[in-house]
Length: 292
Length: 347
Image 1: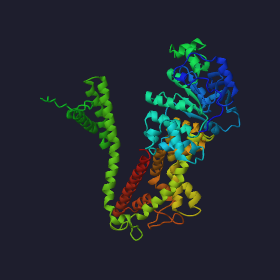
Image 2 (image 1 turned 180 degrees about the vertical axis):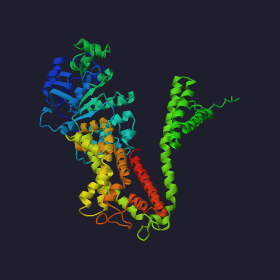
Image 3 (image 1 turned 45 degrees about the vertical axis):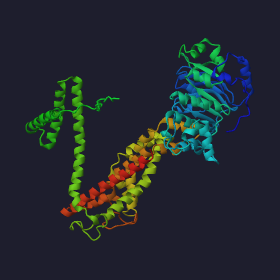
């Protein structure tokens, strides 16, 4: 995995404050300034989304600086997953879908007319809510599936296999049964297999849509550890309904809400600020579990 | 130290229904039989079929009445059970009858040499124990293999086009495939007769082409249903990895549906293995063993049966039954092999 040089946000949040959000350290504006410096990572500008005539997402402009973890939180049906799927152009698989706005990946507009969609999806990996290993493949084949599907030449398959499975926190559990079907693993293991599969094509961004919603606490912790380790190398955007998880794993948080309108971002800031001193009362109510 | 002997636990399966007493079943059956016999004599429900139909009605009715002694739910339950049991029997009886008849009538024709000899020096009404159907078995295999080579890839690709590629013509293609499945088999035979046989001559290849036309819609429609069952998540996972539509279809979707696609192919083979009409017009029949796919007629099991049936003497008819029996077991064997291959993919 290549290390990213543009680590502009290093030190914005001390590592210790991740597990337990500290009281507001830096102000909001300084964070945003630092974000403006870099064009690497992912930016969205004025994103709208529709399903048919149903306006589900309104004017979402968010920055995801390189090598950070951003949590998208909010009640069900507020458009978080839709937004996430727009970041790697999976939104367009729904026949009635339409959109407005721009998404920049390392400064490049991914919805520009001549963009190679497959190349975008190679750089922006995705882990789905439900573990979805390929049923016709073994564990090893699953991990390497992306490289095969995209015709990427891999010199040393064994070391890539070990590297990805280790990063996904699964290597020790499966190293003796790489030839077994991916479906033979437990749900939590399958999800980590899917993470390993997403990592094998070396994405710069990893999107995770409630990756732990179907998992037990042990598997959840393992995946959170994985996210921690990954954030040194890649940009992670994670949708979660679990407030503690958002607080534990993310550097930044964006709170989405729809309440009768199309879904929009109520507040986006450093995670410790969102959780301890949010600007908006609705954010405070949500993160403290008063609704949603 | 005295050890207290615990009483052995009484082991059972409380979730299994208590055995029904014989009378629960026999009484409604007996009443239905009597009523059906009366109806058989008195009303228009004459003959064995009439008796069976009357029995079905009275059995269900009696079960309903017996159930009413308990309550409404029980009555409906009994009524439904009666129908299911009778329905099973209705489906099972013809199946068993065909099998028994085939074995009874065909068995005398079968001897060791039946599978190694052809009919080159034996005529249809010669004594049993002479001649055989090796030429027909080989011909059937040859025709089915060639037809499969043509129709299976084409059928699966058609299904993939309709469900995966979803091109502009997919709606049109689906309608075409559906209407093709309604084409009478003799029409497929006539089509090949007009286009191929009339220009060249009867041949195994022409037979295979005719059968391929008949196999195609069966395979395409079944494969379409199978591909629809591949979970959307698998598709998403592949696209999210940066795979193209081609790579997703051929390396993810089709392998995931492997078992079902094998079943679809087998259904296609089974659909045409016993076809006679199209072969009569295309590959025709020869009583001599032949390896040639083109240039001369090729024997096949259905045509062997047909040929012997038209001769019509006792021995020839027995040979026809024997050919039908062999054909049935060949198809059965094909199914077993295909299911084993299909089952091996998922452990």
